[in-house]
Image 1 (cartoon, rainbow over the protein chains, first blue to last red):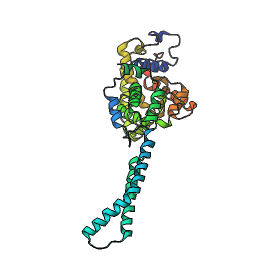
Image 2 (image 1 turned 90 degrees about the vertical axis):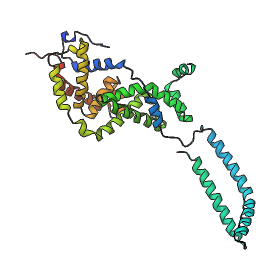
Image 3 (image 1 turned 180 degrees about the vertical axis):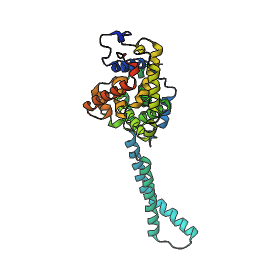
Image 4 (image 1 turned 45 degrees about the vertical axis):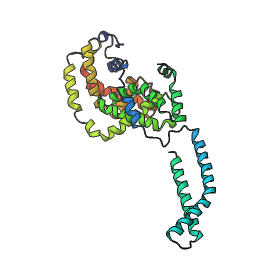
Length: 125
Length: 200
């Protein structure tokens, strides 16, 4: 919208910062122009970085706590099972006595790998 | 329909809170929809009408806004904060394209002067002349330094106060005023033919 006088050049002081009026005229002409979205928002949303988890913030501690409980249960139950499985497998494939320390080492290594994987999966940027 | 009506009632601050608390992308999409026109228009002005570049920069602006939303302290309007990011994106891009920006502007401005020479101030009354004047003004903006152009766009096109423009540009208010004055002086020289007729 033109907010300046059409006959401004006839005003008493036409040189009174005509550039100021010109810039305001230009701004007013553009002020009502709405740039149609035309898929712009969709492109922006597509470019947004992915989050590591879509879970709401309040669920994160709950999920982490559940993993801790599950991990503890596994940690309690697994050694006996692991020993049995490891002992049977060793007897089956090696058919000779085995050292308990070897099995213990494998269990510890497996547990460490599991907990590391869980920590990586639950990390937040 | 009801959801659309409801979203119109939600303030920017409420949408920002949803983004921050629940990583709510729908809320951010609503913010983008609300402000995309203003941000793209601002960048089109800064890029002297390069719509493709302006839209690319606008996308970068909103991605940066999403990443840095936690740092928005509500000390300014959200739109003003977006202008600040957009201006920084444009300045970074302009530094990369400095040689291109310095390219053919002198010839263009000289041509526009010649076109307008016979019609001083006709832009205010004549729609066609007004359109021509705006094209010439867009070209003439290339004469300005980045800081001058940014200051003029913020103060006139975005209708910000000097204080708000200082926030957007990250400089003191006095510096903004200086950039505006110098920019207008350069534009006056470049667009002299559109000014008041000089006595013979």
